[in-house]
Image (cartoon, rainbow, N blue to C red; front, side, top):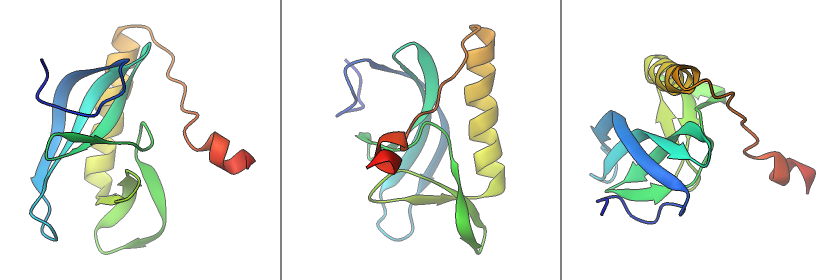
Length: 113
């Protein structure tokens, strides 16, 4: 049994790629590579609890400080360019290794409404 909770049924934990303690709340933030359905994605966890969001970091419209990208929905988490690059590298690498063409349609349903 995984120590990570509230993940979708078709999601399997692979590895942690970024781990840090959030200064604002003291929560443990982990960004992990997960297998979600037929593809590999990045997933956000707060204190081992899954938080939905895009499968790869999204650029901030107005970067501030060191944050250039974001992941997650309520709360959004700011990421540095280095962290975003590492996440994209890891996710794209494992998909390429398994000859999987990643499809990122997150947010398309929201755009259509």
